[in-house]
Amino acid sequence: MSTKDYVEKDYYKVLGVPKDATTTEIKKTYRKLAREFHPDANKGDAKAEERFKDISEAYDVLSDEKRRKEYDEARSLFGAGGMRGQGAGGNGYSFDFGDLFNGSQAGNGGIGDMFGGLFNRGGRQAQPRRGADVETEVTLSFEEAVDGATVPLRMTSQAACRACAGTGAKAGTTPRVCPTCVGAGTVSRGQGAFALSEPCRDCKGRGMIVDDPCPDCHGSGRASSARTMQVRIPAGVQDAQRIRLKGKGAQGERGGQPGDLYVTVHVTTHPVFGRKGDNLTVTVPVSFPEAALGGTIDVPTLNGPSVRLRLPAGSANGLTLRARGKGATRKDGTRGDLLVTVEVTVPQETSGEALTALEQYRDATASEDPRAALFKAAEGA
Image: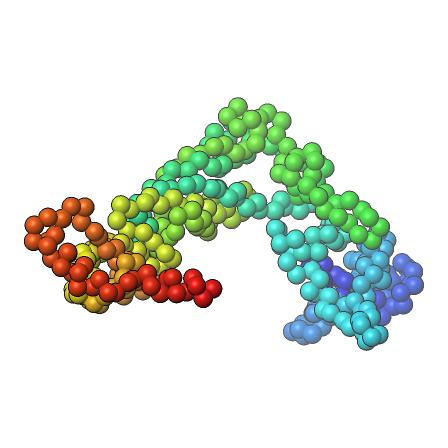
């Protein structure tokens, strides 16, 4: 029975006795109702059988002085199925009592953990423990980062000790249940009506005590384990990006879920291509006549044939052209673009006809001062 059900049920109402009824009155009423609704006296009557179960459950709690006191304290603190208070402006508000205990499973930190010791009776099983997260690094080439790659990763993490199969006890011996927490791994510290749970100090939260420890793991039940696994790095990963691979970390204990694997990716540089998000970049040199007169230029791509782009006449140095769909792969499978930056090259040495032609071009454009606008703007500033 859950904590929520324990508090929400009105056992006094089930038995039909007042809250100040004595133990004798409770016992007398129970016997009368038990005879009336006993399954043997009501064969085939499902309602009578259910009523008998409720009566028996109520009697089990109210006939025990300690359990009755705990039950009364809990209902006094929380009310019959909910808590009420005053909101802004004096308006009453309420919320479902069940919400208070949601998430009381191991690791969720629900408030139910706080009251577990108040309602649970006897020993409990130790909760499963999630495995630890593991971190590792991998270095990819520029091409692998763009298109994705499957790489082998060798990892060292904690796993169940092979020598003792995770018990922590020496071969031929077995651990014993911790007498302090009765195998639960946690103990409850009473704080009035509350009971706060914390890891048992005697068994360190394991629920078991090892008298003759395993020589390999020294009684911890855990040992370093090295393994190699194939990991798929998605396409489009960036340098220094951290990838989470769920469930690929260290193994859990007592059936707990494995931890996660975090992979930090390092990407080597490429001699030709760069990257801006999902776009690749490349700088392409062009001659002065190509920049001045325009034309068609061939541009290399990362993984495929070159593309031909139209260079407009009068292209300035630093002009960027775009080759669509030739960039890095995105998460949805589409590709970014290839950004092509034009770099006008100037010959180091010129002679013969080329020199004559350049001198003629200089004389023909002597009246055009490319710096005139610059000086005009400076004067007007």
